Length: 360
Image 1 (cartoon, one colour):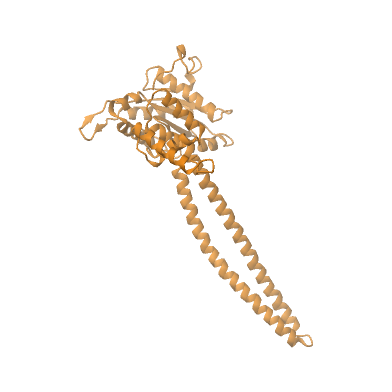
Image 2 (cartoon, one colour):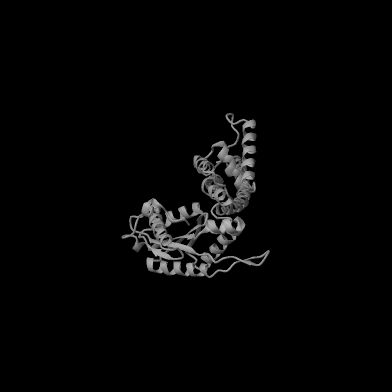
């Protein structure tokens, strides 16, 4: 996470990190937007070890950074901190409000009971000797209690108004929370959101059928190298749109990172999931994109898909691993195809013969 300058991080150090961040982004021809800047600053300041390790590997290998990589790192390591902060704030506000309402209701009830007791005793005092003086005192106390009760009622009204304002604030925080769960390029859920949603699905008892589709755009590096990253982004968006139009309302579409997507299909078995995957694959293969500025028709592109069904002892990692193995098999057998996990038993490991993995 981005760190505020502490005594150990002086203003001069923070300014140096900022300068290095801008230089890094401009060197790799990346716009210094807030997400890109946040990743770069975190890299130089050492705030997140995984960001440091990933970028070091890229830079030491002489590879160029790109916006997709930085956006993926931002979604995975910086957004979660914001999400947790918003979620904690919302919970804290709700607890405070509930406590205040409970205290006020208790105080209001107490004042009303006090007034009732005084009224009863005043009636009793009226029949006693020398009751006039006592009755006057009691009447004065009753007046005071009534006034306090009225004030409490006004306070309760004000607090109800405050509650409505708090609910509005809660809704705004919920919007921020959802924004932290959405991939900005495609509008699909991001990796962080998928992990939470999948955790909930795996926790259902008794467990209903659940399948995962792992999708990858074939030869995506060639698309970026041939047409540029802007066109690559257009391809990603069209694949996402096709995916969104091919699934039901309860199904979950995710941009997992870069050119990879995941679809979670609750209450769908393996056979049904393969049918959905084939529909997505066919629709993507049929897409024909034309570059607006020169009416240049892009070469058709395809996707490969791996399909795995949840087992009773699955966690997120094991389910993803089998889907990834099935995707590997789709890639190794020529791409533009769907492979179910049932074909994995007699196949080679994901490293493939000779320890190599087919390029995406």
